[in-house]
Length: 176
Image 1 (cartoon, one colour):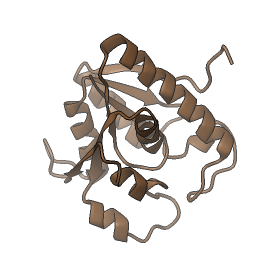
Image 2: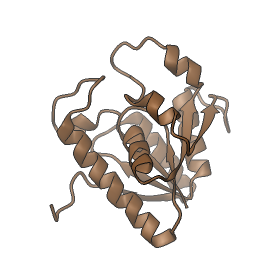
Image 3: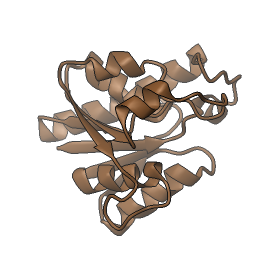
């Protein structure tokens, strides 16, 4: 089972806590991690082997990769444009790559795909091409969407069009 995750880069906004592009708010990170972990473990119990597909952005993509690493799962990294481009870019503070980018890239059970914006039908942005690649590769797509977000909305719509959208993760498990 190949399981792709899409969601917010700013998970802090979902939890209504302070955001910093270079450091996660502990509360937001812990809760997002728990909810993604519950979903991955659900699929693992149901299907046995699970491969996680991460888009390598800060937030949900990164948290899904961290959960996969914690559980020693195979990980597929769909990187928009190229690894070198991300490593060398100077960000304005609004859109940063994953905080643990290099650690995730160095995970021995990770397979890296660089997705150009001309993937598939061709896209204006490499991030949208990456979303399409993830959905095309996945058996199921799970979202973590708590507010309007162009990239997340694009990925969900594409997954629904391909009949691969599974569900949206809640912010909290009611049993906590």
